[in-house]
Length: 277
Image (tube, rainbow, N blue to C red):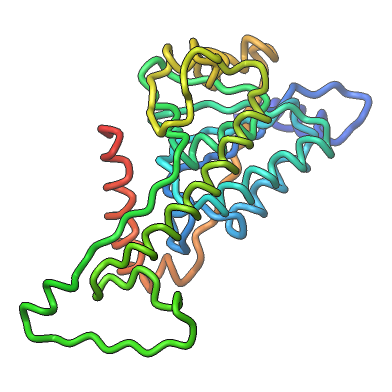
């Protein structure tokens, strides 16, 4: 007990006394789950902001590690989170290294690309640089039950893609234009972040995914590796890891958002299932 107390006291002294050299620290930010939404398990900029800011500011970390395990989600939230990470990395001059767990696809890969380097497991799923919009058409269903849909708008596009009305070709054309514009933004982000690392032999922007080894050959990631072994090899065996994550609110802990989180959990499970996970 006494030896442990002395060791802890010494570590604290190294943190606070400038003339004592402290062991390097890696700030670890876990980015796990669907991007967007307000559920406990979701990732969005407002929820992640305190953890990200603290990771870059507390204790002058030697590097910030992003542990990414996300099938994607909102392109806007992906952009906001990634931009926050880049802004802080450049302001603090701290390297950012991403480690992919099961999947970094679509918006998940957008987040990984916010790092200066990306590593993955050989079986990690990487890529899906594309944009998707999915919904249901229920007009025939309600018609079979004698239900009549009544919609009144000011503005001819106000009820675009109403799932309870027959599909309108003009609406579909407008949606495809929006998706193409978002896809261009996605491609620009990846091209800017990965620069000359990307291969020119394969079209990487079709929405296809690859496993870790092939992703490395294509330039989507920098290598195969896991968080702790790689950071110890780079910063020494005495490197310390400090994790930062979002905190669960009191109402969520009391079960006030159980239904919302359950629904989002189903959606998230379906998103991961797209990649065989």
